[in-house]
Image 1 (cartoon, rainbow, N blue to C red):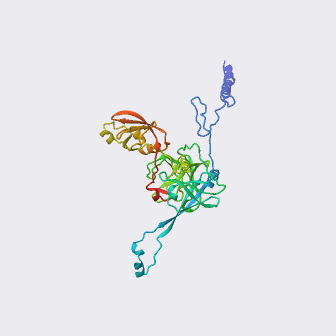
Image 2: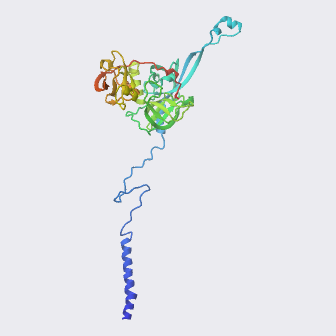
Image 3: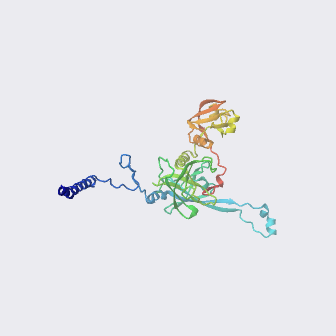
Length: 402
């Protein structure tokens, strides 16, 4: 028996062990059970082990030169001259005083020059710029990107929106393309083109930082695009363009403590500027809707005094123009407007812009609260008479908000 046992130990046991190892190798060999392929860095797996689909990678344009090439020829430099009377003491004009002190009469007028930018908007020579760039100017010279310059005529101005329309008479004019569906998003790339400090046409790059900026105290009507693209004195009236070279705004003002760019600039949306251009070119003035009321934003204190819920938001009617649209619609002083054309009426500035955007004859649906009860009425928009912005002449190019 011992010899047989030895044979088993020497032959059979190693054979069985080798067979087991061979089976294990076959079961785990790469050719029989392929391993999961390596995934790109950052890839994720679903719970069933399949790879999560990744969005296509886009590097975006590495240069915006094509956009600038399309837009830059339509951006012009604007130079103005204004005769300013110098204030002198009446004694200096007295011949006896001049003879006694041996003084010569000095001219009491001087020439004041300023600069800004503008945008050619049509092949027949309409130019958009800011009102404060050309306000009070006796001479306006437009210098084109191609080296030509020409005197410009003022077609009309809109001081309440700080816009002006000029006309130049030249052939073969380049003109700006406007983004038709002008829906800007925060983060969109934009470029400012203008003539900062008179150094010549300059392009700066940034993004849309915010939209719908109001209550800055610059103009009556405010609905600004905010950007961090550098805007400096001389940029006023120039173009804010998108990455395709289309106009999205007219550069107007900066927020600055130093007078230079600090990364907060403001531009009038192209849609607003184009409406002003069309109105002035057609009618000589901007056409705006008018409701004929004065309002005050509600506050918890006022609402409590009126016996209304303090959480209520609305605009308290404090004045009504006789025979105006609101008067004809039977609104009363003390009514609280809560909706205008279906939109919440919780901000006086936005409500004014909303009404101004209408055309005379448009219907205005109003929802209000009177003596604790909700009511509705309809008004027909009138035409708001233009007013001169009180601070228009005080705004230097580019305007600075401090």
